[in-house]
Length: 241
Image (cartoon, rainbow, N blue to C red; front, top):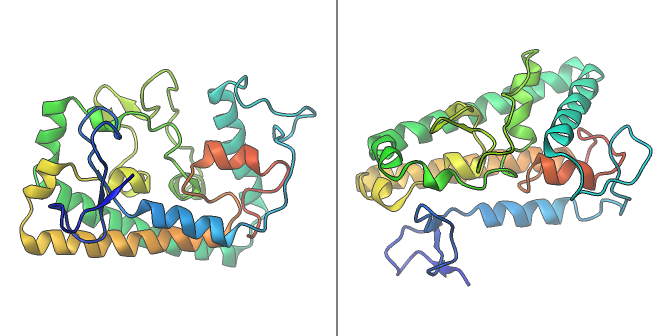
């Protein structure tokens, strides 16, 4: 069970998990990401049930047996192919929306640094960055592909595939929603009351921007690309909801 943060020492719009719910790193504060997930489920609930298939292959995908690295590369490759057929107007829409997301995430990261987030991360060894395998979404991958590049190669043998030598391979503007909006207890306490209010406003705006993509593209989901891609079967990742 999750407890509302208001009345339990936390700001409005956040929730606090009871002891032993979160993983290492005292990840006690969870943002309203759960509302983000509910939005996606409502908007895309009418997607047809399809067999779990490996995009471009003949057989049914057994999710437990498929190598994560291979699946990741296949999904990214599928996105590259789909983007080639996207109209100039649609690309412009994507670029504009992603630029706004990057702007908000930069602003949130500034607050993270003001609260002493970097030093707190060093002191706990980045334990909060555990289990990030399913965090990257379509929104975090598209900026690389629209520039003609590729996202950093993930290492699925790590606790987080994008955590390398105690640093994140994804820059703040391109980090997953749940990563960029997470402020541990000491970091949040290091902010002034005004900055905490600003943080909550930015988090709310950022969540709404992600939801726009989730409501537009079938492959965009707070559950992450590795989950959403196979679930679509042969449907395009950039297909409309």
